[in-house]
Image (cartoon, rainbow, N blue to C red; front, side, top):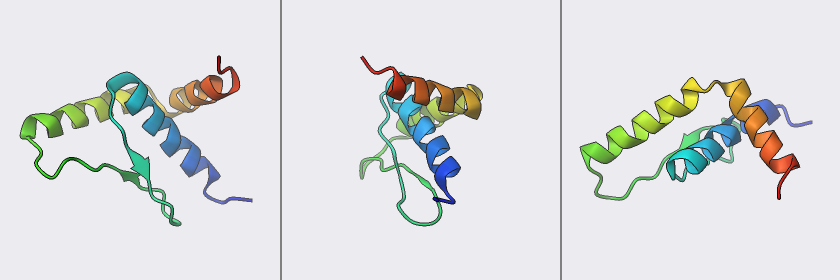
Length: 79
């Protein structure tokens, strides 16, 4: 059993929503701590940082349970 399964699932749900709704590509670390990775360009503007933070806020406002259910539905009922 993977002790980090729920953490991975939740992080994947956040990643999927950031990409689907905001076009922001993120990833997570492959170590024992599941960390959301963001990798902006070497030169990033304050506006781009605000854009990401706003998108993250909007994503988290949906609620983690809703995000996980949306992810599972999209994977189970893929067209």
